Image (spheres, rainbow, N blue to C red):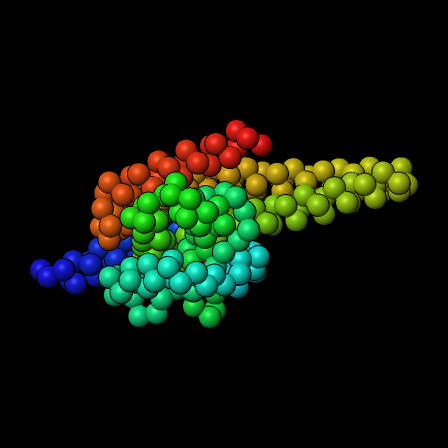
Length: 267
């Protein structure tokens, strides 16, 4: 088996893993789905497909619409030296288009891969750039950091993590909305007539408690999503090390943690 076939096989397994985590999270919210799959396979499978469809829509919206809105504070970065490093690394990966490099004005040392409807993006912080030009980070260490983010793009991690978190985010948002509505109804009930007011207060608090339960379940389900996220980060580290060197990748991670700890200590 050649390297391209191995890569396709690896990517297939990765997507199966993504779907597996998504289904586990779905089962947490809908425990009746598993027995339904055995008792009425057609109905159960149809329901599972509907969850997959909703998850896919939410993931696409989150990865390509919502995330760019959250990241709108990042502006295009035109540093020729760092752009050249990114271009060379992109060629090594075989990526067709070089991700747009953006920057945010913060002293934190960090980088992030994200998407927009216009294409791939890699965001870096002003602190990371200053660390590089102040020699706190070597060129190979900067390469490792950028290669790590390219690894996320190469594996479509931004879309995958949005998909894995989609049902969690959906139920957490529903839970939060129910809490707000329930509290509102209870608050109105306090100023209503005696009997109607008591009913409104009780109904409002039942809604609010239901919302809290949904949010607690969302927190429990997110354990599986965060497990997948850690796996992604490890894979991106391995990818970054393969483009540079394991030593450079390890040193970069160590220095980022150290430099950010020093920033926190001074605040």
